[in-house]
Length: 346
Ligand SMILES: O[C@H]1[C@H](O)[C@@H](O)[C@H](O)[C@@H](O)[C@H]1O
Ligand SMILES: [Fe+2]
Ligand SMILES: [Fe+2]
Image 1 (cartoon, protein in one colour):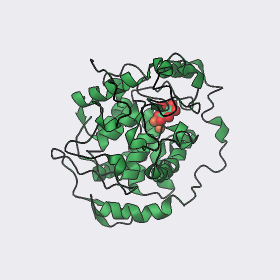
Image 2 (cartoon, rainbow, N blue to C red):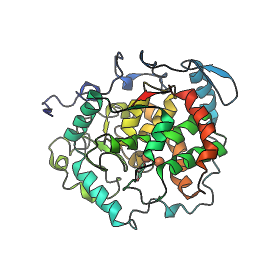
Image 3 (cartoon, rainbow, N blue to C red):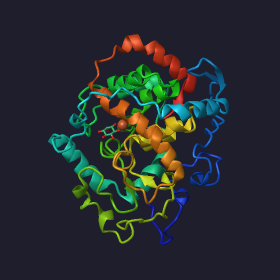
Image 4 (cartoon, helix red, strand yellow):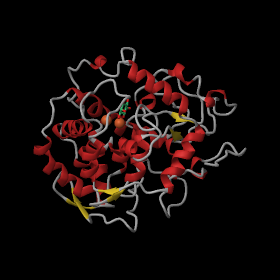
């Protein structure tokens, strides 16, 4: 791909050739003073719904009123203790010691191949071509053909997992934008159909590249054959980053989270919290294990609450009863129409 990394470390990640700034945006998003930056404006080519209806039934102007509504809900919703995961045997989930060989083999490959160089290449590649044009429901149906080799907890189809996540959020009375986040959060796995190199650059937990691989990542010993583990800069505590530079300014291993966030940030009216749930839902070393405190900032502390609120629905709904797709389809197609244009570029 001809990308070489020059001597100018440390640098802002947004200055990388692979940075995914929205067209026309300027400045470093990590420097915004508000922990909840406003929604990105819809791009000129994207037809957005002009209003959405909030959970309280109020018609909202997509860009500004929705933010207010989210602010009101935000104040309360992260404090609302969910009863959803009570009484579950949580040790049954994410048991990587007991995981089958398929999962272990997957992570060994991923941990050896997710390098800084690969991650820059993946971002350049993302920006330099179009993959598909379709609606969100169409994408959900398409995703259903795939199997995730990294997941020790589910043998069910992807559409089941998306619906179960959304339904668990709905049952708990959470707002529509969070239900939608649940419904779409794994659509980035479509990368498997869009020329990914394998499963290793699509699924699985994510982690920071460009600094020492955290020992809070599952199977940490499998990083020893990753060339970055022996790099003079990338193997250090801060690597290419400045202390508390913020997650907006670090490169997370490329996969379905980062891809989907970049698809939706300019083509949806999802609030910042929903985008964070999508972008960081696989970032277990951070949202569950507390790693990377030396890189995160105050804004990240706020979004962490949203990501943690989302996690139980993603993880523990895997044990719920199967959903009836035909019964649920009309409700979710209605929600999709509120937050997305009818056709998106993927
Ligand atoms: O195996 C799973 C699966 O790939 C999920 O979609 C991802 O979000 C998780 O982090 C991962 O552990
Ligand atoms: Fe996921
Ligand atoms: Fe998921």
